[in-house]
Amino acid sequence: MNATVNGVLKYLAPGKLTVAPDAGTEQAFFVGTQTKTLGAAAMCASNRNVTIDSSSYGTSPCTEAQLEKAANMGSIEVHATIKGGVATKIVEHYRS
Image (cartoon, rainbow, N blue to C red; front, side, top):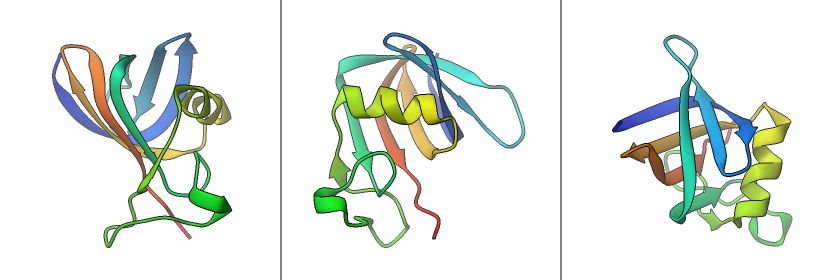
């Protein structure tokens, strides 16, 4: 499965997460060593500062542990790029 999904990040199982869009089907995917994760504030941030680009997407690299903790919160919006069922990039969308 290849997809780009915007929605709320959720925890499913170790190494497996989902993104639930406002409308449409929730997408499950695996997280691998090649998955790039960028946080804005809630997921992870540099020195507890908000770190975003001009489109309000995170720019601080996160660890897999931080990603799973964020997924367990069930409230963080992300943009996920999925290729072959594995996320290549997960970026937190910051809302002030």
